[in-house]
Image (cartoon, rainbow, N blue to C red):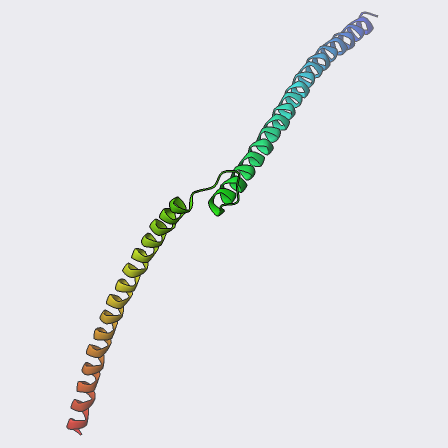
Length: 132
């Protein structure tokens, strides 16, 4: 009988321990569910904010393009637009000139190097012909 009582007490203690573990795990699960819910709300809020910012940027770009093209609510005066275009054109032409100069310089270097190699090969051919 005492052995049965000990068995029942052991089983009862084990059941109480497992019930306590179960409660603890359920509590942790609720906390994780709350955390997930909070994170989802934050993600939704961030996505909403991002969408608003992207829309604002698109609107600003449309307005900027319209402004620069002279189709917006506010436009550049012709003289100011011409000054901007002239500055951009001058910068472009300067870069183009520098690129052409660099290309010409490199072409000259390659040409002179090729001519030197060609002269060396001609000398080698002539010396071989002279040896025969």
